[in-house]
Image 1 (cartoon, rainbow, N blue to C red):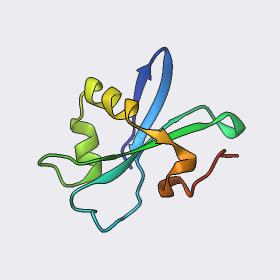
Image 2: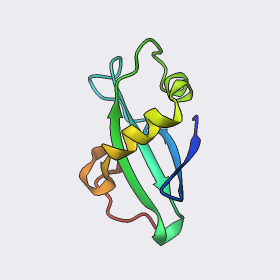
Image 3: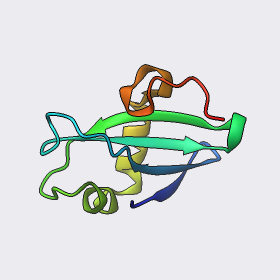
Image 4: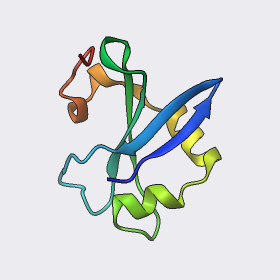
Amino acid sequence: MARRTIEIEGERWDVYPSGRVTQYTRDEFGLVFEKGTGSERVRRVTRFSPLGARRPDTALAELSHRQLVALFEQSQPAWTSPETDYARKTV
């Protein structure tokens, strides 16, 4: 699975496709933003509709830093998303 690392407000976040398949799998997919490890891990999730590229790995690779920041800004906490099983914390 493809991963990218970006810096937002001085913090490093890993970004990767969620891997969850929905009825919209050909039109959109989830992205997970994650920082920290163990009980300090924080995750945020957003949905993304790529133009052109169909594979999530390819679409993620084609996003610019600015586009990733914009997606992060519209993301929601992991506990609000089925992509992360509505988890409040990851241990």
